[in-house]
Amino acid sequence: MTRKYHLLQVSKSDRDMRRETEVKHHPERHRPKMRVSPEELALLAHTVYGEARGESFKGQVAVAAVILNRVQSDEFPHSIRGVIYQPNAFTAVDDGQIHLKPDQEAYRAVKEALAGADPTHGALYYYNPEIATSTWMEKKAKHRKAIHIGNHLFLK
Image (cartoon, rainbow, N blue to C red; front, top):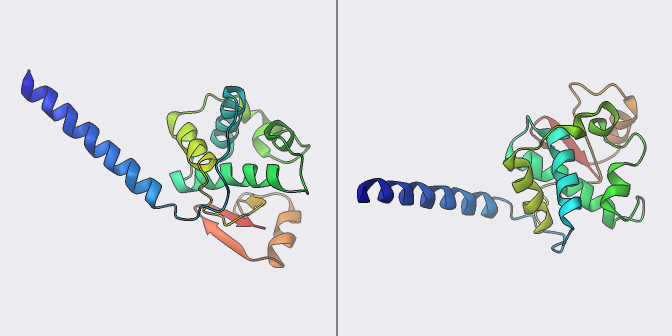
């Protein structure tokens, strides 16, 4: 029994070490920490899951960071709900994927972004050039510096 407990403890330590490594892997902390209500946290997680569930952890943090960057920008509504539900802003809202139940990784990515992580360096837009149907973002990307994270391009 003691041996089994010891193995569980080692496993937990390994998981904690991986988490610390992932946190350190995001040195791009441009935004101050943000506090949100439990409802806003859930809305962010639903949006990240609907928009980026097939992406890496860093890609999910990047999507959350874009939402938070928009909240702080004068170009967008100044609330999480306002940004997410702005007409035609997010495919997950338009096609209903925002209602899918987010996994723990989506919540973890949101918390990382809320803690200040921003691998996009302040991006306000992103899109997947492989599946995007709108040429609007493509035109926008031609005139701006883009950061490629996973399947998405992020731009200011």
